Image 1: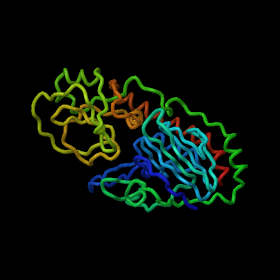
Image 2: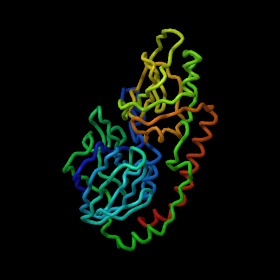
Image 3: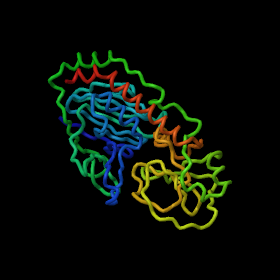
Length: 328
């Protein structure tokens, strides 16, 4: 029950929802950059939402299945094909022994997520299967995939009638609420940070009104932004404090950095704002060179958006109960 990596893609690594509870030891949370797409892919194959998925970046891998499986692809539209025939995102798909999954040119987004029913056999490190690339642990041997790697499926589907299963899966209607989609955003919703009073009024106004460009020096640890430099009222030494996914910190050069999944555990730069959790996936799907604008909202509004987001997942999980029953 294995999958052969024919081509690894630009950067393909296994990620779950993160390695929580170890920041005090200097271990980053990590996990999927786009947790929404990761969770959606898992639900579509009947998994727990924390099961590790394969996060692929821009150029997807080419995989040969040596056993049948049920997969789903969510997130960026990278034009996936199965045996050279196009297959859709956001649907459960049955693949058979000998099938080859590949990806084409990017249409929208940057990161796609592949989930397998039952997941892939991986070793848990600190209660997580996420790959921490800088630390060299977690996921598949602590690294991104390479040519000729072999992945082992946890669940054997050979006992199923695959034609019948594929037909029944195709009959299941999947309705995605707009809050779970990749609809374009005119502005990223952001909460003013506790350190905002340390910046000049003009800098705070610029952050919430000007356009910023995603720098080529952007990756899983942080997204560097190019645009209006932000200035502090005075040179201020801050005590280092815990960091969070979506904090916007400003180093001495004045160019903001949005902290992402593999962020450092602590930091001492002033944080002008925090991206609302519900909008983090839009940043994770942003390409270098693309522009971002930030719109200020209140903490209460951010919490309401997060509650709506979780409600949408709860309804989707409930609606997919028939899918889970097919594998029971």
